[in-house]
Length: 288
Image 1 (cartoon, rainbow, N blue to C red):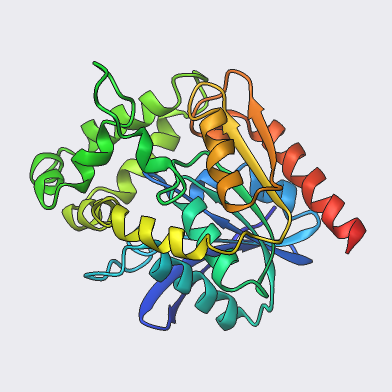
Image 2: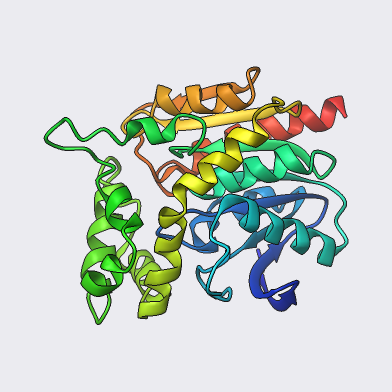
């Protein structure tokens, strides 16, 4: 399956995105510390029936890294502007990690633009995700949230050449539930994406703005989502917490917990994810 890479000015920023296939559009929104590349296994499957669009979000990958705008409302607006640029009236949206609250906010505030929403593994701010930041235990796997949210400190400690050590360690830890799901070559792709100090700044900025994003999600959640919603979690990561977060936003959401899976669902369980998503989208198409 041939992938096409695109670069263009979208409103206020220059964006990079990947496309493949043809048909009803599906937008894939990645998380941290990744890029569009996390969807490399899912794209060929979805592209058999859909036009797949996988952008690098604001500040990540090959998309521009502006000085500000690292909250879910602004990032969701970037995606909406990209759809406008492509002439796409509406699309299915799938998000992972930070891509999940961004995709949710798009679905909640531009309801005519999102046909369905699939949420993967995210401690969603404003839907209870912030409640997991409890450090009364000796070890909290989300320790990096407050670290990354501390203004300027991560750049000083990770930047200046420390990116390879930090991001290699983080990615290895994130996929430890499924050894081998990330190869050395895969990790190298992500390390390269964060290899300069400004990339560290822009990626950390989403964490710095966690509480602003939480307020935005809470405001949007005053009206529950009324599109089909699927929530998928890893048993060895957020598990039922993730399903509960999504159901606070969409009470009728379907929920699936993948046994033995960690946080990096698209890379740890690509075949299972592809089956779940294709079945979910096919069910919507058959009723549409």
